[in-house]
Length: 301
Length: 301
Image 1 (cartoon, each protein chain N blue to C red):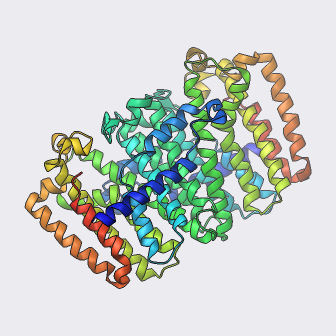
Image 2: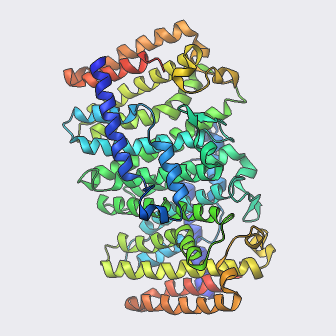
Image 3: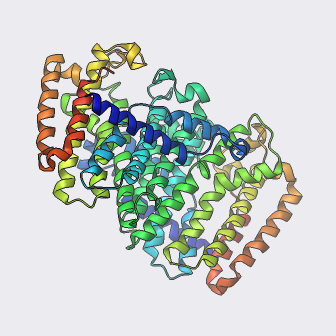
């Protein structure tokens, strides 16, 4: 696991470097004169220095199967982080989850005000599509526009936003197991799936290869969510950088709440076997994807 | 003007029809089972039955100069309306302009709640890019991805969102004339410019042709804003479907406030002459674009 963690950290550093490049500048003579400077600052605050960058690592690991140049996968990874970052900013808003902190520091609206946080999220979403559409992402326009379309679907009403809507409704309406799994598939699963598939799209892979990576990502996304729920019940708030037990307190149905801890852990093992099965066709080249799965379910925060 | 208004109305009807097609369904057995049904309803509420559809008409009129099939221009027009609609939903939020009504009915958050309004705006933005990236918009991926990139830039931090940020800051910081013009160029001008340029992109026009249409749109956008400010001072609230005089009340600098009514009207005439100059190269084919300008500055609401 040591080697994998080093790879993950090195990749996260590369994500950070490219984010710094694509985000609007925050310093320098040009930046300090920009009348929308505060928006730029909020966009940077929301996306820089954040998280483990698992989604971009998933793009990179999937793209590596098809010998895609690293910088192309990295650009797609950055586009996903921009979407993921915007969704966290909006989810944290007072009208949504009302979260005062995120990753151990004030959430974006707590730091910049609500209006700026709404706008920063909006502009981050636009920037994600700008990054994908840029010729630097891939020389073939056919590939770039395919990525735009897939990401738009993954982020929208049939994906991430749809999942967040179901999550909001779950505050007043008790969800069953099937509905909770649909919620997860949309809210967090859709972006994982896009990340995994995008490697295949960048590499001009066959449909069965793309489908296998999508299926792997579905297992990974669900496992990731179950692990999150388990950590919310059992984890250490200091490591998490946020208050725990909030889902239960908000009366929200979670997979662990519905399944119980023992059954949830059994499901994790089942998902790991299923994920490994989907990766078989790629042989030893899928090592990073196997490690990523092990990491997602083995992490302590 | 009668013929023009009939053309405008017929085109607005076509926009409505295509919007109904691309928006997530609200009725029927499939729709009523969708767990994110409320999100779909809010997205429809925010975009259907709304406004004069001037931006899509601008796309269509510009595209017509290059014999672009109408349905292609219409798809780009719909993408712009999805962005425009999302921006109105977010601008109306309590943390932003706190507008209880829009087009004579409750604003989206007043009707659906704040959280759903945030999400509906987010999902509408994703949908705009999905519509552009779809092969139905243009058979060539090079054209589709160019449109995605231009729209992403127009909607983001260097365009619409940046302008809205400057507008928010203007509540506490008095803007001068130059800054107020920059504000307008970003907040509303960027989408007008994209609309006008997109006709050239769809039609494979030359760079000078695209630049002429961009320059025309800059004049149109500024004229449109000056007229809006004039109507806010002089207009009829019943026709506008909203309270007037709010900019002055909020202490916001407006072009009319800074220039005075007489000078603002002189500028309108200057912009009309400048716009006509940019359209000269297109001859009589630019009739709809000239009429659109006349309409924008002649309207009573």
